[in-house]
Amino acid sequence: MQLRPLIFPAALGLAILAPVARAAFPVIPAFQDPPTDIRYPGKLIWADLFTEKPAICKTFYVNIFGWTAETLGTGRDAYTLFRKDGKLVAGMIYRPALEGSTTMGTWLPYFSVEDLEGAVETVQKNGGRVEVTTHSFPARGEQVIIRDNQDALVGLMRTTDGDPDDYLANYGEWIWAQLRVREPSQSIIFYQATLGFTLMDGHLGDENIYDHLWAGNGVFRASLDKIPETAAAANPTWFGFIRVENIEDTVARVPELGGFVFLAPDPEIKDGRLAIIRDPSGAFLVVLEYELETEDPS
Image 1: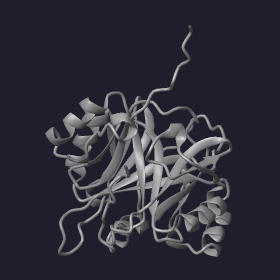
Image 2: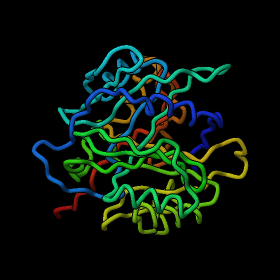
Image 3: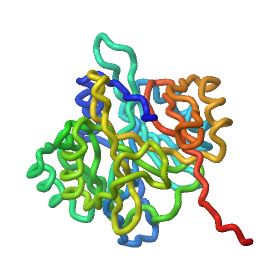
Image 4: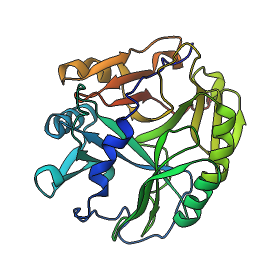
């Protein structure tokens, strides 16, 4: 059984990018203080939520994942930082809804690179393009928003003082990312070149949501799946996964907080430990209950 294809307006990507391109922007703190200068190319290290409803979304994420929120700046230029147990996990910025459409929030993931300028050149050589040119945030680093060779939006970031530490995500943190595309073979070439991903065919742990797995420096980082031919309107898209302690409890709170359960836990998908939800602004993300397998001492 495959995950349902998600369908987004074709112009959505252009609409979410305008706030990032503005010159004035609050100072964003570094991931590491003191600096480590250690980076993990190919690791999902950040995500920004673009939404027309920042206030209600802040309430949603604080309550659903136990995040804390700090808003920098004021008005529509404000930027909200989310933390989990003091660690930076995500950001949020205002984005107006598309003209003539309902409100649609969007999560944009950022992957770590060691050489941002070189990564941009590789993107362009492999059929991608730059949507928002490189911006520098002195304490945080440099980032760029691109479209890959199948038009999926994604961010690339080179941190100034080092990436977030590399460990199994705690509850309420990003644990995985999946790309849904029409031509997996094209994505394999693109991300091997751009992020140094290594292709691992097959299914991790004999599960049923991974067509292909990507590893970086020997660590599994992301997966790749094909959009079904029957989903003609679905767009190539990256999805972030948040680790949760109890999938049933998490899903039960979603509607109470103004969200929507798009795909409820299903025993045929990751043994019922996965769900797709939408926040109050319509932004999709995946929640996953995951525990390391322990050896039987007997």
